Image (cartoon, rainbow, N blue to C red):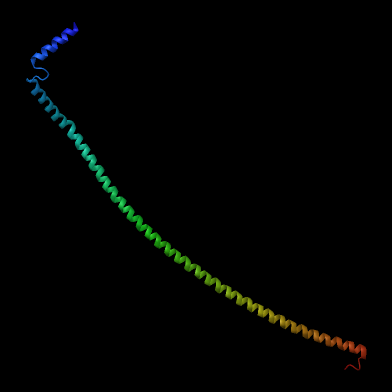
Length: 161
């Protein structure tokens, strides 16, 4: 029975114009669609579009600022690297100069110490020579005195003088 009622409904629809009946419903639906599009545009799409546009502008501005900051940072990094290289060169020159000066001072001190040592060596040699001469004189005197004593004992005291 249900099948017959569906068939009857289909037959009646087929008689009235089929799938597309052009009557007052079609323009009413078109007006409803246009009103819905206008309402959605005013309430939803425009604010959403504005939010999306403002967000895109914000992102674009931040990206430009970030690129500018990055360029400045690169420039500063290059400048700092150049200054660092110059400072290293200057410090290396200072170190080299200080080493040369230290070697010069060390050489002067060494020469001075060698001169002083040579002078002390010469002075010691002179003192040794002087002491040697004094010792030889004393020895000579002692030899003379001993030889007199030996002669006196051998020859007698009267003959020696």
